[in-house]
Length: 406
Image (cartoon, rainbow, N blue to C red; front, side, top):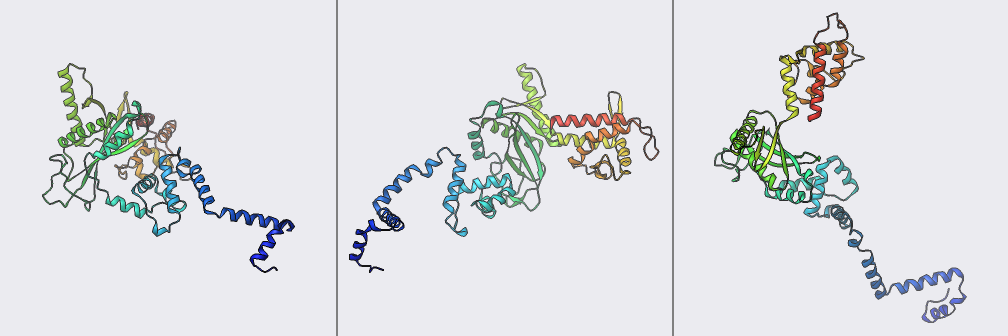
């Protein structure tokens, strides 16, 4: 071992041509590393690399949201879990993912760096969203639909009234239509109903919740009429093209729609235009549709106590009950295995459940009725009803009808 003095070091370097191949390779790597350690060389190389391989250049053609998510991963990765802070934009992107699928967000949270559900819920709680037509929402809708084609802008306006729990309170809002909310002067009162409006694409499959109102008690028809006009005007100003109005058969809803039709008919008579069964609001012509699930539920509820007469034929609900009871005798091999007493037996039917209704008025039930009509007696010895074939035809008709409009 040679002493580590400057003289001996120079003597070793002077004899480098006498080194073994392995030692020569080590010396070459050492000389190369010493040269790279110089600050000027490192700075020039770092500057060149940053220009050629910068984050902005690599993500120039990337989707802005994906770019934001990637930068969030890079920025938050060196930090500890409790030391991570997210911007409002990053929280909004994460919130959009969570609202699409909470289960998917829970899985992605295990792989990527994302805000926790607790963080997002705290942000939602701080949002100040007021009832009525929100200008910020309408501006966002207008910005989004500016680049759409006309056939994508066609939409239907849906609205319904829902009951609220008595624990939900709200504040009196100055922009609410006069007479819509009758409250005391104190601001901490309770709402028991909410009126919700939503948009749905007529050609393309898209939907957007738009407006909601709080109220105490059911909404009157005159107030509802004013709200419908305001909402349709706001939708038209956003660039969308409303062509239909969809609601259920509530008494206030029917009265409001009827009043709008009367106003339209009066204007058509004054203008000498042909009369039709539509409503016109702010130069937008809308057809009126009653909600198909509510219609089929209403038909079923009437069918329980009344017979249906069509084309001179009579259909009875008792035929469905008889076939169901006969099918229940074959417990191991049932044709109507998806039906139970809540679907068929009048005293046990839940009249507000639409899913129970459509199962009873389905192709499977129609086929079973048609098959049973070919026999002269049931398995219990009773004679088969003469109207069984008629009931099968009407059930099949309703199944096809509501598949076409739903």
